[in-house]
Image (cartoon, rainbow, N blue to C red; front, side, top):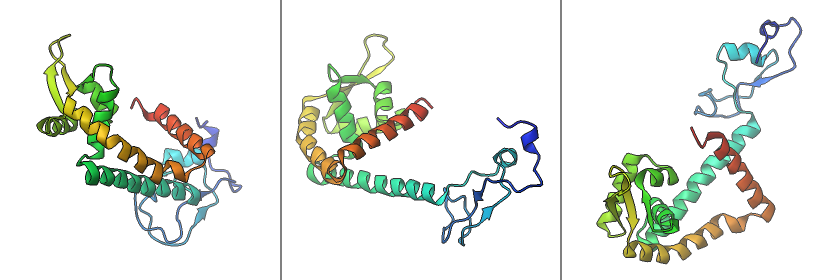
Length: 204
C-alpha cells in the first residue's frame, strides 16, 4: 500500500520505468490499445503515483511474448483436439469433457450444477449441450430424488460406448500435440503454473 509520502513526485529521477509502447505493436487488449511504434519508457514512473491515476500496468516485452504465445498455442491446441474428435467420432471437445466427468462419477450421474462447474460452463449453455447429447442417446436427465428440485445428468450405455471409442483418439491427440513435445520437467512446470492460476482465480 502506498504511503502519503510516496504519492509526491521526487525531484530526482525515479529508478522504476514503465514500458508504454512496444516496437511494431498493433492495437490490442494486452498492449493497451497503444499505437504502433518503437518502445518508449518513462524514467519518472512511480507505481504508487500512477496507480492513483489509473495508469495501466503495461506488459513488458517478455510478458507480452509469454502471454501471446500462450493464447495462440492454447487456441491452436484446443482447435486440433476438437477437430480430431469431430473427425473421428462426431464429438466436440465440450461433449467429450461431459462424458469424461460423468464416466468418472461413481454411478455415472452428476447434478447439472456440479457438471457445469466441472466443465467450466454456464448452466444455460450446459443445458443446451446436454439436450443435444440427450437427442443422440448419450445422456438422460431426471429429477434429483434428494430434494426434488435439482436435475441429474445421467450417462447412458450409448454414452459409455461413445466415450470408450473416443478416449484413445483423444489421448493420442493430447500426446502428439502437447505431452510428447515437452520434457518431464516442463510437464511438471506446466502443472505447477496452472495449479497456481486455478488457486488464484478458481473461486471467482
